[in-house]
Length: 251
Image (tube, rainbow, N blue to C red):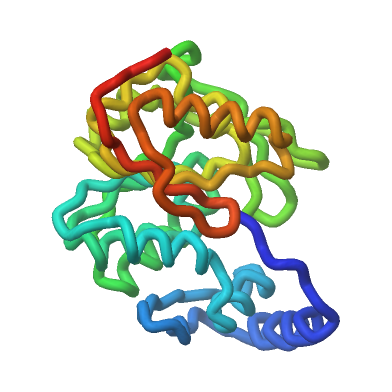
């Protein structure tokens, strides 16, 4: 997940939003100005910049657009990295199915549940980190930066670490019966797929955190997905869509 670069005008507006949030006694529901009609329920602790960009129609818009174009009715979707649940709620709208979200940050599940409830969508929430086959199911150290919207299995400057449950990607695919996989896991995507059979997946929508991973690692990741029998069919900002076109698996 990433935010646009703040201009002076943005910063002034974010400060106004922060003042409004500070005065909230309970929760308040907002609706996206875009045509998806997504609803977001916030309290006084909600990040002001996140709410500002949501109200401006510029929060996760790239991912939301890709979901509208590539998730189909009846798709079973597994989302790794749920954020506050907005992308997952749209997946539910589009697919008409319950959405499985795997989210390890302990601060986010209440927000995800609240967002799904506000949007009338069905949720299967797994509070754990998705890991590659070598790491296996168990527990793993997870890094959370100040401000709960940024967290990763990879090192983060000034973060705090805590142990969280972990499940192999193959285990999560089996539990969810997913044919569509959404991935936004703050850099760990570079290691996630090692040793995992992706034959059950026909669509992969993945944010590649190239500024953190570097150009070579990002290119290697894209190449490895294509070698598994996917075509790169669409992209927006840092998110890429791969569709399966053949049954070749290369490890």
